[in-house]
Amino acid sequence: MRKRANFLSKELDFVTFPRSFFLPVMFLSLMPLPSVAVCAEWQPIGPEGGNFIFSMTNPANANEVTAITTSPSPSNVYRSTDAGASWSKIGEIPYAYIYDVSAFDFSTLYAISSSRCYRSTDGGVSWTMASMPSSTGWAYRVCADPADSSKVYAAGYIYDYQNYPYTYSMVFFKSTDGGLNWSASSFFTFDSFYPYDMAISESNPSVMYVSGYKQVNKESFGALFQTLDGGNTWTDISSSVDTERYNYFQSVAIDPTDENKVYVGGTYFYRSTREGRGNELSWVRNARRFNAYSIDIDPVEPSRIYAAGYESVSVSTDYGQTWTVHSGCIQRSGQHIEVAPADPSMIFIASYAGFYKSSDSGITWNSAYEGIYAARIAALAAAPSTVIIQNSGFLMAYKIVRTAEWQEVVTPQSCGEVCDILIDPDNPDTVLILEGSG
Image (cartoon, rainbow, N blue to C red; front, side, top):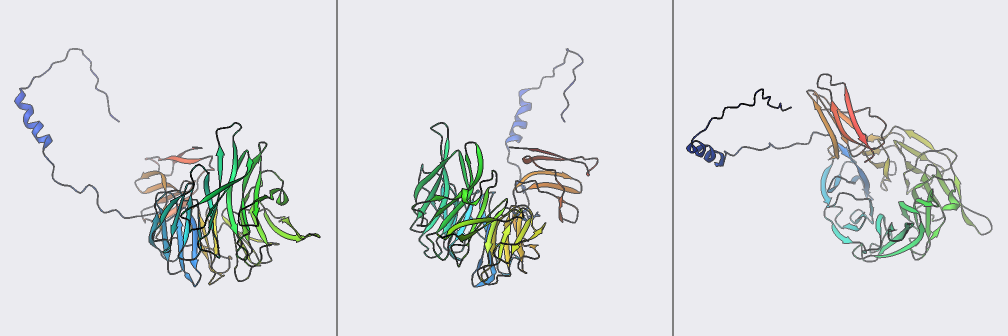
């Protein structure tokens, strides 16, 4: 801290210097200083991991895996050739906030970020950007047509801010030239709406679902929309699934062999059945409450279903009727879960805080992000032997000791993001954390 000068007397003596005294000093100040290395070569020291949003394995080789992280900019694309044991960066999407990624095959991928669509035809090495239609809304979820590489679909919303009371509508985007050009159509009107997931049927690509959250008359419910004609018309089937407030639908998946078997996840897990004279689609809610933020189905044995939740993974072997929940096996919420087509016993999960792998059909899980440095460091504090950081925009703090090994430390329950961290210089075990809803 700088100290202010303390003048005890108003009477000051001034000393004058000849003008020639200042000239050498001014000359020296203008002379270039010898070149000095401003900073040495930088090397990442961790922590490893980051905010993962997507993964895909090569359908012909389960050891080849692509993983994509988002925030900070740019979003990075990594490749592993040993099933996640080691990674190399192969490309980057030149934008920070990528909301969703879908793949037609191991080479052709699509990434959505509000008003932008990025496409890669070389497995994520390079990307081209196309703009979504102006003034038609924002896209947050994307699905590639499994039968036609030229067709891509996206779901989002448009916000009417010109007429009060303000409303939201679901927007369906469609491209028939591989994501270069898009058309958009609006459906439904709510007080508020947001799409959490989107699914397309592999056996019948005309069938699609969009799941999410909607607000009607200031009350919040889960949202589920269905199209049977490739997006030309949509039906709101939310109330047929659940009418209980605040039970949002975070995920949706379709059996790859049967378009009539649909699964919806959120606070509860829902599975569809056909019954009645008209063989109409109806829903059964699982009695056991568990989070299902992302769902994937075994492509070889569709009775096996996997659901990634908050620090948990749930496994069903009977088409979602009963579940085994494995708690504490991942960190934070699972954003994307994928069963490897070439080896269905191998499953990968992309989460807010890392990348995880199971090699025994979801029984045990291990981190698989060694060598990936894609975290967003929002706060940092250092003491002589300890560094504490807050990682990835969530309450996830680590400390590093002299051995250069990072360990997760206990952090308080959050009402927002950590803004700053202070370590007591006299007692490094005393840590102060400032957080806020902003």
